[in-house]
Length: 377
Ligand SMILES: Nc1ncnc2c1ncn2[C@@H]1O[C@H](COP(=O)(O)OP(=O)(O)OP(=O)(O)O)[C@@H](O)[C@H]1O
Image 1 (cartoon, rainbow, N blue to C red):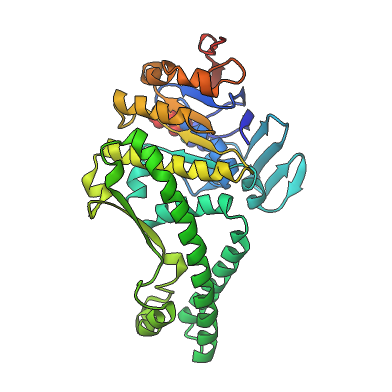
Image 2 (tube, rainbow, N blue to C red):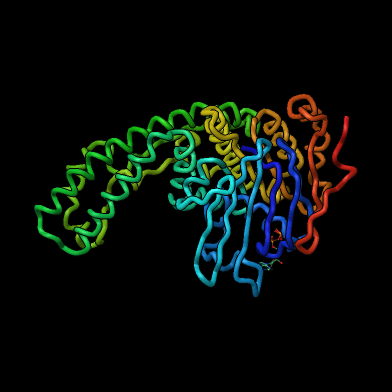
């Protein structure tokens, strides 16, 4: 889906917002603290059921308010809505007016990816963000995997409980057997997905980071030593697991390593280059998501000017012309967007309604369209 209309109520500092978005390209400009990230956060919240910057849902309601609502409508009038009452704790999920119990029902309809100024630091930090990134892609691309993934998580929990509670050896062995079986299955599906992702990457690197495009290698680490079976690795680490109190090997411990000439990518690239690399990877993932044809991905880029010089932003605008995504970009001032505004390829490739983009100005939580920037051909 792409968002045709976004409505928010009591969300962060945004006053009641109702804006019409362009199917391909949108710019949100405004001063620091005006509410740009909050707007992206509202869309992200619908796609993920959580924020990208706080784990406390109560932070999302406007100060002093005890409820908030976010809803979107696509061009075919599909309507997704999520409201939260902080007092009662009730979360209401609605799709076309009908109530649903699971956030994943919403997420099936909207694939939101975000790149913020902090993203690349998190991504190249611990494995958590890399795992999250891959799992989001798999959720949308490998539909059949969802049940398998849920079952794996259930068995992992059971096995961890066995370790923590020092249950008898036969119960432990039962869960270990099942855990190994599911780990192998999950790791295999994931390996396929990562292979697909890696095969998309060179195209985007050639646009965004041409100097290193052919030097990058990617390693998938399945979650246990490559040379051993998981069962053998777990047997060897029985004592350590008992001491730690959780499963130290298994498909949940997977990781992806990016290397340039055998060195960790993050130790070789500048901050701007790391950000471009993450964008290339995000575009590769968006392409895979788009290809399964169920949902058109939505790409949010917060503070496009951070870390990126004019050349990088020009390459980025070229890359975006090649994506079939709805893109929403924030910036503190219009000048930063010149490479995008001057890029004629948007007109040819992206403009199906004679309008190149929509631009909005956010001021103190209020949002106004910038009329003269909505270019009619
Ligand atoms: N729950 C809330 N209720 C009301 N205002 C809030 C709430 N949470 C944060 N704010 C305020 O909302 C404002 C907008 O924050 P936001 O991060 O969206 O700004 P921004 O436009 O992205 O700024 P920057 O360019 O500095 O990143 C900030 O001034 C912040 O203090």
